[in-house]
Image (cartoon, rainbow, N blue to C red; front, side, top):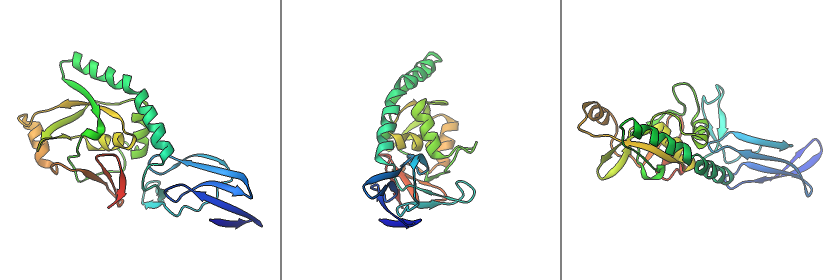
Length: 217
């Protein structure tokens, strides 16, 4: 795409999702933008001219709304995978600590787990956006292991938001299997939506599937 600004003609080179990644003046790079896994820019160098034709509007994310990505950028996926591998020891430590407390904890790929809700909020109760939560998980697992129950022959998580964030970066997750015979677990299962292969990010038209792929519903 060509764009004239201040009398100078710039060429805007987009990534595979349609957002401006590199700005050229003639044959010289004038600027570069890199994006975080779920939408916000995470690196800007030089001149960054706005020409995001592949973005989607996620209302209310910053009060006035912001352009976010329909899917993760390839470099973020690669970086996320490296960070996920780097935090494997942290996950293992959490599993060992829980096991010492008498709980049976396993570490498995987030891709092996299904959702138990039709939709999730785009942020945590404390206001942390889903993409920031994913970056936190890439650095170090936080909180209790995911509660997982077997339904219809599939492993289903009762903790959907953290699972969705982990799927965005392909992270391994600590899980604790729970039983439907537990009255509290049975009640929770009854309140949920069964076995779901994807989950809607509420307030958007974006879904995240079991493989971590983000798509429009």
